[in-house]
Image (cartoon, rainbow, N blue to C red; front, top):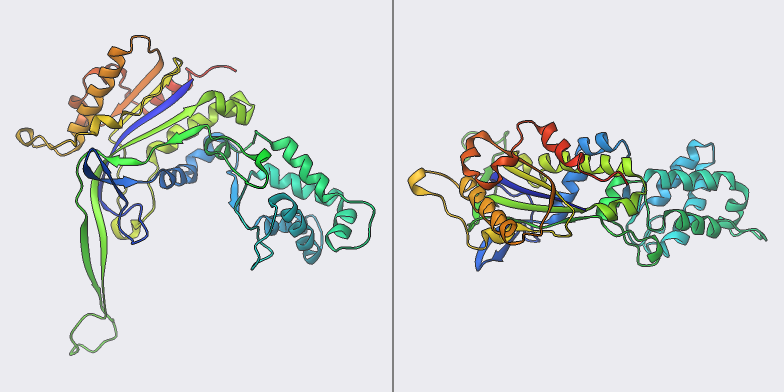
Length: 379
């Protein structure tokens, strides 16, 4: 089963996701310049939404080079001397990650993605085997060794599975320990504007508050790039892969619910203090399908939409109409397609733009979510 999410979201002037020059990211699509927000930006926004952790009831995983510091902190709470705990934690981190940072040996050379329960397990078992672990970490002669064995145990327990919903959704990879890799259950497309976009520039100044009144001129000048765009966003969850990653049907269902709720309200944080583009989703189509098909509908906008001048609309209405028509075209032709459930949210202001999808419209957020959750398998 696939759970798909198609969103139309219009943003006021903003710079939500910057490139290396500080300008909003963009891309050429259909031969025209489009505004773009990377999948990474939206994935980060989704997993950071409080509702995600609230609904899954499981703490988020931690992606860090500082796993040694986290382990040492937990060992200290168990009563171990912090200097000794640092040595043991660094030795474990080296064994797990493959190597440490050459300039900062307290950090791993690559980011490590671990769930809270995995970090707790490491600290608990190092504490239980403290004397042996400490002798091994300090290089004292000992016939016994434990750190390497604990690393192997951890890998055996967590290989191809995790207890962290965000890791299950977005996956993890460690080149030196491929057996710890987890295939992502969720695919997230880069959001693209449904229309041609023009980049704009804001010129700003700042004044010295203590400068004498008779002194003219700004004390700082600068430029900030921005744009305003209506985006199409697409995401897909592979239920089979999610179950393979979590091995827990109830947690998998809570993960889907947390994802649906957080994806609806997630907004990247780039330059928000300067623009405050906190704009809600205008249309959301959620689908559960058991036919093996999966449709990214971005080609509905391969020809850029344009405002309907006679009706004095912006980009939202024509974007909804294009999405509705393109979906119906695919659904009509592929007569072997089979929906388990479909739910549509659309703002009342734009309801008349819906045609074929209007039959799936839901009036309440909880109804929209539960329509999909109720269609999920029991195993």
